[in-house]
Image (cartoon, rainbow, N blue to C red; front, side):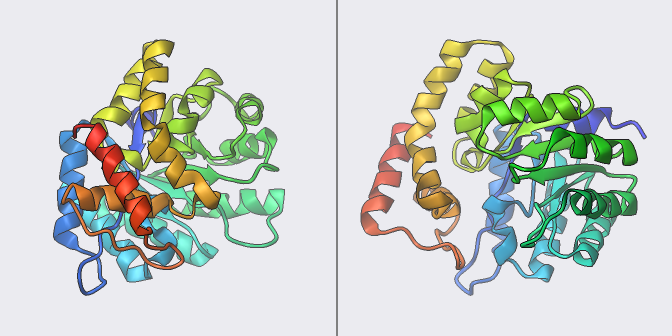
Amino acid sequence: MDHASPRAALADVVAIPVTPFGPDGGVDRDAYRALLGRLLDGGVRAVTPGGNTGEFYALTPDERRLVTELTVAYVGDRAAVLAGVGHDLPTAVAAARHARDAGAGMVMVHQPVHPYVSRDGWIDYHREIADAVPELGVVPYVRNPLLDGAAIARLGELCPNVIGVKYAVPDAARFGAVARDAGLERFVWIAGLAELYAPAYWAMGATGFTSGLVNVAPAVSLALRDALRGGDRAAAAEVWERIRPFEELRAADQSADNVTVVKEALDVLGVCRRDVRPPSRPLPEARRAEVAEIVKGWEI
């Protein structure tokens, strides 16, 4: 199949929408649609319902299906939908088929959650998902620093619909080696650690990056993309410094507040409630004030 359009969508800012919760604790459908509207109106053209910033692992199976369906229905042809799937293999395969039937064009496969992940087992896991939905583009989410380029190359040989890799190991040199060993042109390489790592990964071959910050300030994320695409290092550095305090709050304590900081900013803007589910946690009052001050400085 021709995967030119999905590949182009991945070589961009890939937004990871948060999942807003209402007063009853369930998914707030209206707030979620409003959030998607902000992203689309801001120029975002690729979204991942069921990503980590969307609290994938804290959602029930029905809620994961719901956010995929809401996203496809709202987005229409305005953006590519890359639905997050994962957990045990039957669950991941069923979720991929559901995403296909709902109208998504791609799936992003979360890193297998298992204490024992072998190289060949990793290939088998992704191959079964990719083979179940040959019509869809498939993007593995790589967080394992031990996974080498040869394994990704082998998966690509077996599954032509594996078209991209979301690489989230915090090591730009390792990324550069893995991408070249796997095939720099064979896959679309996405910097999976968002804006803070995007410039370094871009220099080593990435052409897209994921973003949770884009929920808050689409123009800021797209400005970084434009600077990287244009090779304007000074402009990229200016955006990087601008967002650094916000992203460092999200990355602190092994990313304990990754989602919470984004939702706090959205609460400040009146987009959705700040509520998160365990094992995420509410921000202390002082940290909430810090987030509000950063957002105020962006003049959104």
